[in-house]
Image 1 (spheres, helix red, strand yellow):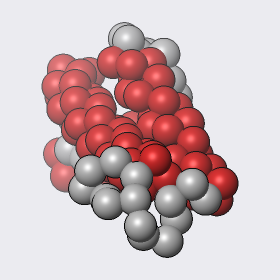
Image 2 (cartoon, rainbow, N blue to C red):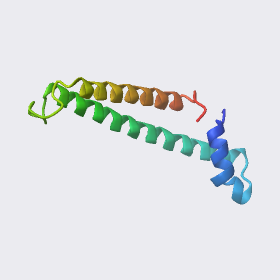
Image 3 (cartoon, rainbow, N blue to C red):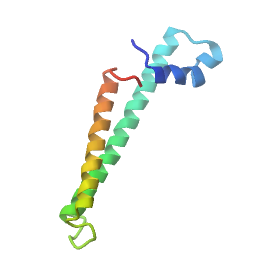
Length: 106
């Protein structure tokens, strides 16, 4: 198991290490919980960005819940907002998947 620097920093500041030492056994369980929490936060961020992308696209196209008469309909700026939010969502999802596979530095 490779422990990323971000977890090591957290462990030294907030983990069992500051209270009672904590060996490799404690570290491995804490890391599993920390990593699961991180993935959950990344998935939540993905959902928020994706929802923004869909909302901006619906405004741009005049799809429900919009009527097509709102400011922003067929506006290239709104289309850009949708594209940007979509790219951000894709990057967050990729990071979440790498985190799940243990391929990031935390």
